[in-house]
Length: 304
Image: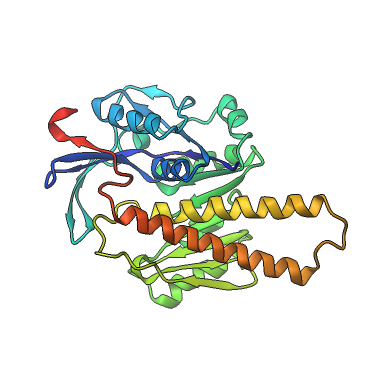
């Protein structure tokens, strides 16, 4: 079974329209989604000692996400107030990341040794640990980094020293050509194994150095209820499927002689794996669109 560790941010969304508080954040979301799909998942990040953090940890326990290496610290959980308009989350106010930004996770040797047992590590630009990416690299575990819309060529160039899989979200201030170029540059210029570019309802693109793959999102029958976490769920479905299938291919090659698979055969199999992984991403994103909150966990505002 594939094991994924998500290192970094957590947050709660406070929706005064439906009167609910929903836990989430990029790294928490990915950990929960992967656990929902049957994979072993862990979350490592600073957790505050306030009532909102209790909502977060209750949800992690319910979805069997290990957070035993997450330090509990005095402070305020990251939060944002939001409302839904036609299923789209509209942010209205936030506290600038809360504890995750004011006192970022310090990755010590215990955490490094713990992470060595995983197949993939995920983090993001909202985890505020860019100055510690070398410590994640020292685990010798492949690293997936989510730039969201915060990417620039300089940031990508810096991260390339440590990151294996790059995830970008479309920047609306740039042209299609500029957005698409970061996908190929990440691999061809900066050495990523795979680069992913998501554009919401426009679809997702993947580049592996040989081919650009595109997948339109699947139709959500009845329309989206809440798109919160859809991007996170897409990459969750993609990355665990891709890592799992590539691991199987490697194991089969190691148990066979050199005639087991030709170069052309292997290329064909890899293309099939990427297409399958994109389909899994689509399925998980469609499922997420049909629930409220990132992963259908929340409590009434007055009950925390």
